[in-house]
Image (cartoon, rainbow, N blue to C red; front, side, top):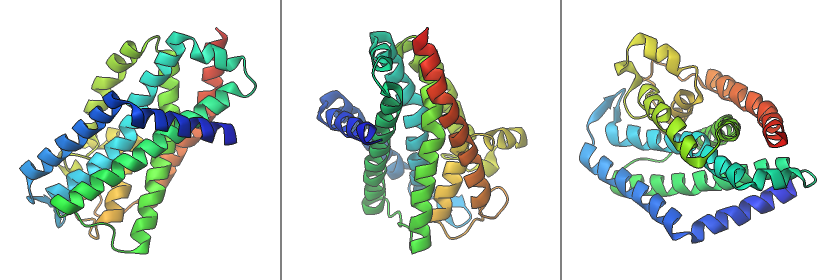
Length: 256
């Protein structure tokens, strides 16, 4: 665990010094700013305006995309270059690698989310959680949400041969799931079959849990109530399954 944390800190420091990565992150924040300025304070239902709704949705999608888009491309690139094979020859190499990637992505999620909320609060008038309960909900939803998708991204990454193949394989499904999961458009506007399918995946519950942290009224939710217990169970199930399967799959693939 100590080696994995150290590796993750080194990776994150390297990313922060990479101008290309920094430019990509800044571009994403600029796009978010332009979108909330364009959308304005139009109502989204349940006493929530579109700026607040989309800000929370962007934070949820940041967590999800880091796990199922960024991580598979990183792992596929490491596999293509032979880094995973070399790591497997070291004692505890694969677990340390997974831990390091998890730490690095968690730090990326935390920094990106904090900047987004700061921009939304300063320019879009997005109110931060108003109670200790809201902050606690925000922290555990972000943490459990990250754990529910990072192992999934690791499994996707090891099954794809190259970083380009990973980008092509996960790009379109992720965008479709973003639309269907109600993080950018209220779920009540979706057809019933789409609503049921979306609730299988962790992205819907990440958005639901974050809205519970930021907003008082659940009037815009599907069942008009906060279902944090169900959110914890669904995200926890994805996290548990992924943490069992990801190391086994990584070892199996590198062995071949």
